[in-house]
Length: 137
Image 1: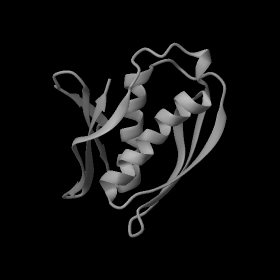
Image 2: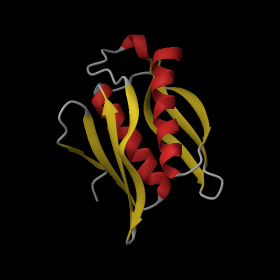
Image 3: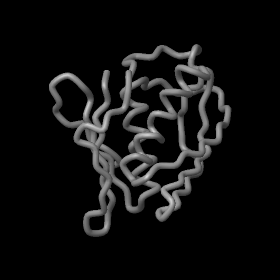
Image 4: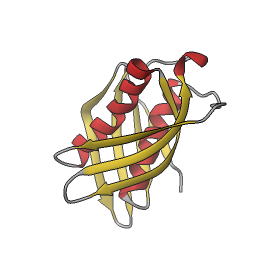
């Protein structure tokens, strides 16, 4: 199964991510956004812990992805991989451990201004999870 795909959109970046469970679809959503921001290999590995909470899956995904933009802009941290991720589906809480490096060491090819709620969804279809996100670039 593919992790994500990019879709046609007039000005912004739109993608769908896929996963066999909710954690995998959130991880693959973050990887899709990362690919649009930069595509270099991360050399050094630093770790960060992320804890976020939403009121539903869409707000949780929005806050999760925005956290990566905050880490990039506010803490000079560019993430590479999600090492661990755990989502409490009833309380809409997410905890993750991610690896990355200092952002200033890399060329950011396509800055993302923001994650949007435009056309966003997170849903389960048959035996897989799907998310759709539009990024303001």
